[in-house]
Amino acid sequence: MAASTHWIATATAQSVLERGGNAFDAACAGAFVLHVVEPHLNGPAGDMTAVIASADDPGRPRVLAGQGPAPAAATIDRYRAEGLDLVPGSGALAAAVPGAVDAWLLLLRDRGTWTVGDVLSYATGYARSGHPVLERVSLTIAAVQRLFREHWPTSAARWMPGGAPPAPGELITDPDYADLLDSLVAAADAASSREAGVEAARARWREVVGPAIEEFVRTPHRHSDGADHAGVMTADDVAGFRATFEEPVTARFRDRTIVKTGAWGQGPALLQTLTILDGYDDDLLDPSTAAGVHTVAEAQKLALADRDVWYGDTGTDGTASGTGAGHVPAGARADHVPLDHLLSPEYAARRRDLIGDTASHEIRPGDVPGRTTPPVPPLRTEYTTTAPAGSLPGAPSGGAAAGVGEPTVPGPPAAPAGRQAHPADDLPPDALGVTRGDTCHIDVVDRWGNIISATPSGGWLQSSPTVPGLGFCLGTRLQMTWLDPASPSALVPGRRPRTTLTPTLVLRDGEPVLACGSPGGDQQDQWQLLFLLRVLAGGYTPQQAIDAPAWHTTSFPGSFWPRTWTPGGLVVEDRLGDDVIAALTARGHQVVRAGDWALGRLSAVTRDPSTGLLGAAANPRGAQGYAAGR
Image (cartoon, rainbow, N blue to C red):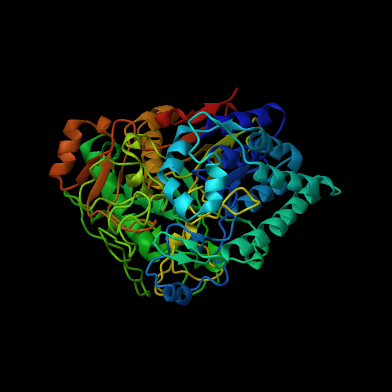
């Protein structure tokens, strides 16, 4: 079974399974296709995280960490000297070291069975021969076309070769990326074994991509603050990165084990929320009722407050691990993320006591014994740039530019004052109300029981100028860091930004039974939480849970530039119902209606260990996600 955010990627993964490849071969092939067919949502110079379990050791899930760190020259002092108070949302200064390609190739080497050439053949074919461009890609290019023409000429040449954005359904190609993939295959084919071939391809990637990036980012170019800056990434930064397999962090909920990344990602915040909610009866966990929405949203706010104060790439070797509540490895540094405390039942009980009958409009992080609580991030309901009016495409006076940050689901055309800003506000009016993603996701499970949930992102076409000769651009993950040395997610050379990428694996009695995930930036785990509550506590099937009305809170500082928040904010699908929405408003939630089918882009695969029966489900919103299998 395979499920993803694009039907071509799902079809690719299923094709690999049909030809005898395992789930990891299939996910790799599908992921490289996602680079080509969803370029507005991810790219080769972006990042990815995955959680996996192998059939030969199902009770020991692992995290595949394809999140690159900050470059060696990316210091707070350097960025402050550029006149910045936030890391920009677009441009090369926002780029972490590319991590996605190396991670996928590491997975192929250690867990796959196919050769580099076989896995990459699908993506190379679509890049060289073409594929029909999505309407969302056309709309994205249209939204940033002025930026491309006036400031990013390499992107204009790449995405508007005829002087205008491609029409939906038009066949588009990426010959530069196809050439790069061919060079990886050539390096692999010259090696003595399949594994050595994968290593040769990884080396070739670094040899070609690093120097091209260093040469290109030396030239200043427009960033989201309205000024021109040069990037700081070098070939040495690219050459020094190696993706890794790491121990996950886990928590128990309703007799299931939920598996997430360490606190260098936001995943443990979902575990914190579930640990708080595990103390309630099922009738208070229904995300379709006013009482359920209120209870779940208030628990999420508490966990997200802890995320924004305590989380970062600060633990021993970057992560904490455990099989029940999270446990920090022996020898952790004094600045480690205190997951052993934050995931404990005792702490959850104290946090549960803070949930009242009305919506909180505060940021309420918890205390950790023996530790000084780091500062709460700046709380801004609005953010203005120094850019003059009209200097950024689609931007209001002093407002945010199109293409910055991580696109989320658009709100209504006339956004209420103080609503969390996002770049979808800059889309043309006819694009509003249409589901807009920000990342990709793919889940695969095979006949043997291998399973993977993976979330590729970053390097979307509107994040920074296209690098000549590569056919893609850098990502913007460093915008999740703060230019404040007191923050656990401060910008530090060699340290990973606290990513929002957060795939999920669920175990029952030591066997994987479910893999799921979603695009959505800060909403990824919020939408997954609704899905998990409906499946694990509500008795929904995975497809029913994906189809059910979705919602999320915005009552926390956003992880993406310009990092604003809406106190008490709650964005809901209208299908939640007028009575429920009215009851939530009466409880003090600042409700924004997003439309009937606007929120969430989940996919999932399942496996019943007792029968071997497999299943899959995908998001209908936007008519783009697809699930397949037999």
